[in-house]
Image (cartoon, rainbow, N blue to C red; front, side, top):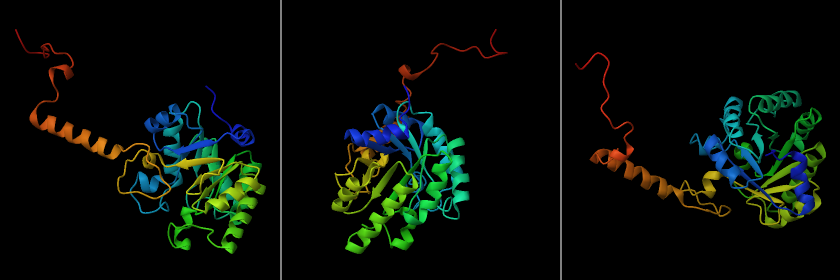
Length: 277
């Protein structure tokens, strides 16, 4: 089965077909998300929080993104693979952005890279696109700017802020991004952007009128019962299931019930070398 390409993702908007994007960070999860029908799989720098347990995404390295990208790529048959460019891998200069994006294509097996930011990031996006690297943009709440934004907060709440986000999105589109993530902005603003932009919009906390949606795999699976933002829908509650399975395993090991005869490989007596008659 052929993997979806950037032009095919763009064509989905023209057909009015919603785009389903989800994150994954390892082979097993990627394989399941791909089999579940995801159109795009994102190796997000959210792995800093979800996988590494950090409070933000700022310490994730390019090497870590490439490693997780390789793992995810092996699990995909159809879904398009995008990898986040982590903090300070594209902000210094367009030339450095291009060099690092190329590494994620070569070493991480990405089909596209994602860069946060609007007009300020447009030169880096343009450099990548002109070199033949597909780019996903990201405006609104940009987690790598969490300190400047004062936390993970809704963006574009007033007219001036909304106008800046619109300008950013148009700049990203003009620079050549083939789709744009809209994060944590009012639904009305996301709807306006989705109408004005010719490229698909992928929303997270941006309402129902985007051309697609993205969620972190751990969130939609309910793997952390403590994390309950309003924009997340849990399609399963696996935290209790996994914890319960672990408790059952530990109890059976402690009691000697596991392994049972059914779990023993080669039940017959094994003759050790140099022993016996």
